[in-house]
Amino acid sequence: MSEAVTESRSNATEYTVSEISGALKRTVEDAFGNVRVRGEISGYRGPHSSGHAYFALKDDRARIDAVVWKTTMSRLKFRPEEGMEVIASGRLTTYPGKSNYQIVIDNLEPAGAGALMALLEERKRRLQAEGLFDAGRKRRLPFMPRVIGVVTSPTGSVIRDIIHRIKDRFPLTVLVWPVRVQGETTAREVTAAVNGFNALTWDGAVRQPDLLIVARGGGSLEDLWGFNDEGLARAIAASHIPIISAVGHETDWTLIDFVADMRAPTPTGAAEIAVPVKAELEATLASLGARLNACASRNLERRRQAVRAAARALPSPDQLLALPRRRFDEATSRLSRGLTVSIERKRARLDRQRLTPATLSRRLNETRTLTGRDIARARAAFFAIVRQGRTRLQRTSVRLSPAPIVRRQKLQADTLAGLTRRQDQAVARRLDRLRAALTQADRLLATLSHKAVLARGFALVKDAEGSVIKRVAELALGAALQLEFADGNAEAITTSGGARPKLAGKASVKPKEPGNQGSLF
Image 1 (tube, rainbow, N blue to C red):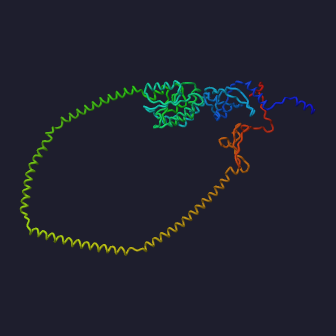
Image 2: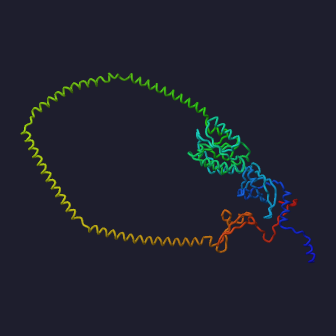
Image 3: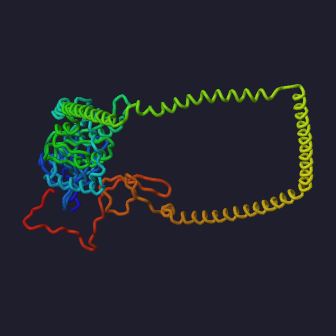
């Protein structure tokens, strides 16, 4: 019996692991060279640093790994997002390194417009709840901008229509920021353009625009999906430059139409909203100038007539000056007679007062007597003031003594010494309380710190971003983990997904549906 078993084993063909993996890979790729798979995106984290995107497609019963190469990502019409239901076209292949199979996606499209509309409505409700659609936060457009910035494709007909319309209405400076208006990078490039225009200065080499126009021609919902990006909507809402949204035709609506300061039905309509018609302004100014001149002429004529009427009501200058002139003449005649009388009187007084040596001597003696009396009075007053000052000084010197100052200084020194002792005691008590509180907080920190738990042999599990993982259900297959121990950190990779319940004492066998013979999926 032993010899039969040995001989049976020797007749079986031996394969290496690589041969088995290669055979499975060829079989799967030959049988499923081109497939369309419908499912929900799971585990999407955006493109890898290499430009490739890795995620999974799942339904309520199974999941399959998926990969989108860098060249395919640039051709996608919309950006994949977590939880979006899509239809993926591609080919199945295997990955020998992990013994699993995956789909290499060549094209990705949403599972009907309903999925995109539902996602768009969810974004719209979230931004509206934050107040980004409120009319009160929207800015007024400048009436006559000097510089207009346009964010659009430099090769399309949109920019030509805008420039042509602005040139016809009101020629001015137009700055074009070239971007892609369709594809995976649309939202990122338009966001960078809006932020770039806002970063310019008024006095720089390139002047900051007074108004921005974000424009694109019409298209399907998938073609315009880049303008429904939440990050782009927030960038437009945060712009301090007024923005006109001109994406699509009049019936096309995107998310940025609600946050922009003004929505234009078409790119050409945006140019018409941005600038007035120069010829109409000139005609209006000419009309207003003519009306102003006519109004000024009529006002001047009315005032001239009012002056004439007032002049007729006033008396003539001769009538006004007749009475003052008569009074002046009478005063002139009286003045001459008054001067003559005054001279005669002064001459008579001078004749009565004749100057002689005796008169002069008498007046000199009187003056000398008065001067001596005034000097005696001044000397007596001076000596009296000196005596009063000396007496006041003596009384003050008696009252002044260093003894009160010494007593007061000693009292202040005793008070200062007491306050110093109280200060030292208060500082010592305060330091003791703080030292006790610090010791208690240190013991509490040592008690509550997870380091003590790690020292007992436990480990702290974190994901790649450093967030703590508390449940097995939060783990994803192939996710990178960080393990923190008491003496250091380590890295790990999960080999299975979330926890699966087990039946005690029984094998978990799924009943086979009648009429079905199984499936490769």
